Amino acid sequence: MAKAELPPGPTYPGIIQGFKLGLGIYDYLYECYEKYGDAVTIRVPGMTPMVWVNERNMVRDFFRLKSDQIDQKTLPVPLDIGNNAIGFSNGDEHRHSRKVLIPPLAGKNIENRLGPMHELITKRLDELQPGKEYDIAELIAEITLDIVAFTLLQEIDGVKFERYRYLLLGWLESSTTDPMFAIATTYGPSKWRTVLNDKYLKARDLGKVPLFDKVMPWGQAVQFKLDLAEEVRQDVRAIRAKPDADHKGVLAAIALSRYEDGELLSEEKVITEVISIFVGGHDTSAATGAWYMMWMMKKPEILAKMKQTVLDSIQKHGKFDPIKIVNDPFLDACLNESQRLTPSAVGTMRHNVEDEHIGSLYLPKHTSILAANFITHRRKDIWGEDALEYRPERWIGKDGIKPKPYEFYPFGGGHRACIGLNQAKQQLRLLFAEFARRCDFTSDTIDRDYWPGQRQINVQTHPAGGIKVRVDAIRPSTYGYPAKPVQEPEEELAAV
Image 1 (cartoon, rainbow, N blue to C red):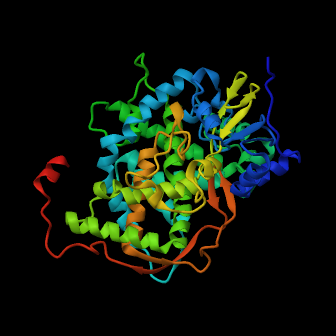
Image 2 (spheres, one colour):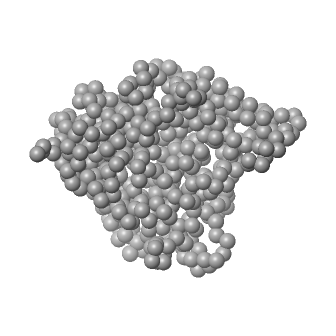
Image 3 (cartoon, rainbow, N blue to C red):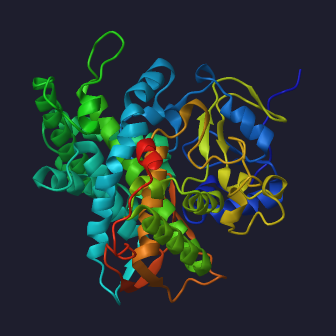
């Protein structure tokens, strides 16, 4: 019988491999792909060997791994989201978490949030100053933070809204500093996450952060987590004290959810999932949006076509209709193409508990297997000879490409696909539609030959140094509206 073994990979020290991943992961992945091909073994401190696969049959078998074949508690995420978060859970616990969290983040619930999302986007765009330069990741982060806070609370302003924004952002920024990155890389991301969670639980039980921890690089992160947890805990108790009241927002939905035996989720579980939603809805969108803007700056003709697409929709429907906009095929194709070439998370990971066949590989147990979408999305045997070109048209029309789930997977796949993928896609389509319609951007650094370095923050890949753009013009929110109201056709009104 064949012996399970790891594919070849770099042989230099793991600490160097870890910093290469953190400070240039796209470049490092492509370097390994060109040298080792369909699979490569990466070794970093504090982790079991990582096997990065990118060939379609390997990725297909990867997504077919069942819940009893994997253990996700060792995922290399250094942030103290909480060790009982949906992303780290297994088996029945994971299935129940998805059952609780998916409905509030899908279907009509998202559609009903599109109007307020557009209102929040409009407010932020109205604040832009012509002639001023912005880091687009920071701008998008501000907007998506508004949207996350609204999603949780069903409020778009007020003291509580601002309090959640402050605590969520403070926790993330203090958790992703350079010293925290260095510690996590050296110690091991999942081990460091557990250490941070233990420090938070100790601070919770004491009612304060111990002096030793307070003065260390992680002190602020633990303090923000403690304050955020207390805010959520008090809101959960208030919601549960009046379960029959007209509660709205995802926080209330989670607080009132029960296990199959009728037991409410623990307060710590609710806190954890609130943070999970924040990380998924905020940081992921900020990173994705930064790369997306890079492509728009490199392809101004695409941005111009996007603008005209939005103006045509306004002329047809008499207003900016968020539902029509987020379902436009061209806007969908533009985002797909950005996520194909520059996915914010360069892969999705499983940790196998037994020896497993993955395509032509036979991997030993306790291997961290990662489906490397950054490489799969660029393979010419899937996407054609122009695989490295940004070309939205490849997705459109009857001859447009319709990739298999194991050929295009920016949000993961299988039974562990990202629970917030629909809201993430819709908020970015909405935001970039308004960027195209209302703003004129230029950049002194981004041109057709520009390719930034990469910085790994949490599990998201950001352009190193940000994507800097200057706002040359900002048009009013009614720009492109017809002089006279447009009457929707009766059959279209009925469909809506």
